[in-house]
Length: 201
Image 1 (cartoon, rainbow, N blue to C red):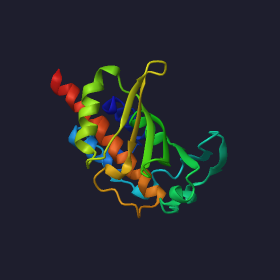
Image 2: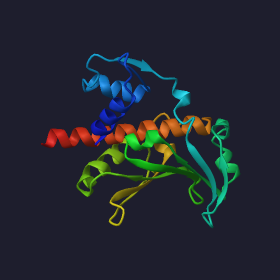
Image 3: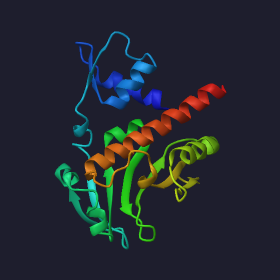
Image 4: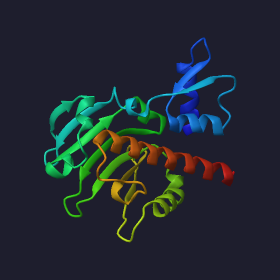
């Protein structure tokens, strides 16, 4: 799935000069899987990944949109969510399509006080064991927990996990850095699932 999405991105973006601008995650993937052919890969500034994202601030209780936000809103520290526990953030971006995610919901858990991430992952139901294995190995700490349930209606995995237990997490991050950190985690997850499928075949 990931390979197919990245190949689609390559063909849609390739200019006549055979130059392709991509971010670090996609660049490493393209090089690793030999998808570059005779292209020149140019690494984009990571801080621009979500520049064109659609961002909403929403009320947890009613799920109503409080306001649409611009990219500059993401420059705030992540503890904005701790100061506004009644809110959650929702972000959509073309880049999320690459990893099979519609949008990322981000909030502070009312009970545990952790920074929780909720996504719908477009992966087949048969990847149940591989997904659980990856999450168990990557989420650090005794209290690390996650919720994973296959949604039959939408054909996606509803995944909820605390960002706090991902290696490299720092509460001092800005919201923009946190979203890039989430993207990297999900990109790696999808890549590992894809590799486990290929090795099983």
